[in-house]
View 1: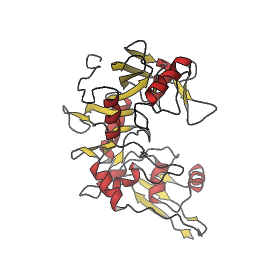
View 2 (view 1 turned 120 degrees about the vertical axis):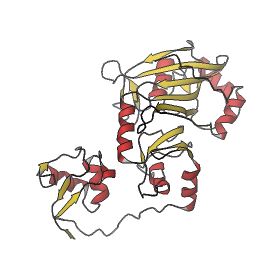
View 3 (view 1 turned 30 degrees about the horizontal axis):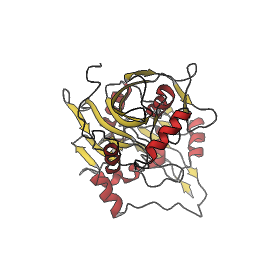
View 4 (view 1 turned 120 degrees about the horizontal axis):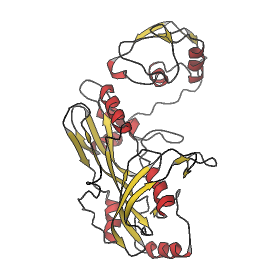
Length: 337
């Protein structure tokens, strides 16, 4: 199969995307390895200039796609169609919506994006939320598959870029709720501990004072059940992968209940506390929830977006079982700039 020379003008809604992502969506017959090769040789160009995979494209630019040959594929992967169940699900998750931003309350167990053996995820369902203009909203940040709560979607490329800058510039306040064990010895404070990917497990993060990237998390114990467990609010001031989970386990010495990847040191006391909690009928899941996001509106100067996601039913059960107030409304970090 042979593709002809093309010149394609970048649309407004693709403004700011990485070139490699744009090619994957708009030139699906071009394998990624071939695209890299053509870029290295200068055959894929933008406005006549050489480019790299990470080049950010701009609305109005013209991309040159040279002729290329691709062998016919004997087995084309079937494109997953949205089921009525998926459409109903993603629409039911919407907790905030205006002409620029959508927020959903992501449930436990639903991935943000696809990956190995993961074809059912939020990103694949966004087609069901497209606007009257046909534009499909896009993710601007992610939550772990096992973390529930507020996720933001941008309804245009311009809004996605503005939200991305807000997250990078730390103009966004993110409040998470968790149940940890044991109760932290110090009831409030800051965890400053650099984080890096573990050399032994690519998917696991560790604290590394020399090689890690700066990471800061504020925390406050709201309620506790003796030493056994505590309801803790976290504010991750930076956005490192698995930051709260790592800081809780390795920084505070208090694992988030249900976290199989990050565990605090297992001593005799913690084993006894685990045994005490085992009989309380707590939810069989990670007890971490993205409770609230506060940020300047990305497209409306002077306006503030403040979104709160209710706890899932299984987490409400756990909060009640431990005697914690699942309707708690205060912001323990309101006096921290």
